[in-house]
Length: 155
Image (tube, rainbow, N blue to C red; front, side, top):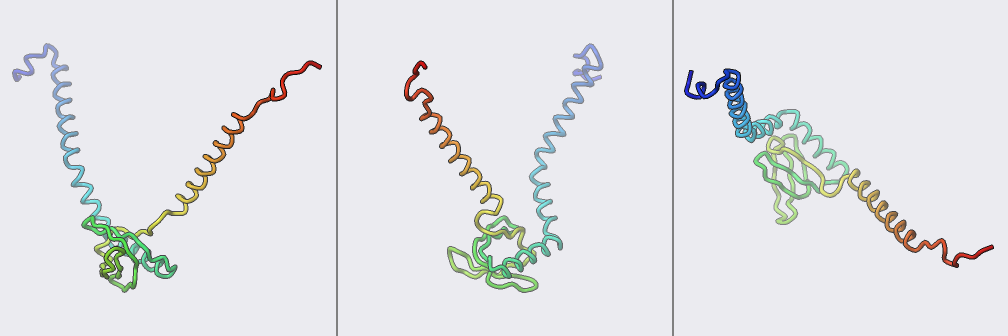
């Protein structure tokens, strides 16, 4: 037995300590490797399924004339602009700030999304605003409510 084992009178205490060390080491390694696993998963998402999904999104936006988009590239860069044209292998956007045309391969793109709020967010804003207005009206009504306005009179 090692010197550490001699410090413990009970071998079970020694084993529990060693197990705790192993668990701590495993957790530390997991925390160190987590960012690398995330990069690997992003690279795995860029397969044929993702390319088809991006192609379909670009085609849908062109057909619906909702071409104002945010594009996230594989290297993490984000582009903001309008889709101008699309081919089988690539599409072209014109950046908002620089008005520069950029041709992007579908393979280089991680995500294409519209700019602005989605329908769900718009509904949530409307419901939230209505709730605040209703709450203000109720508070004002309660503050101004006086059931004994004319005073109490005996009959």
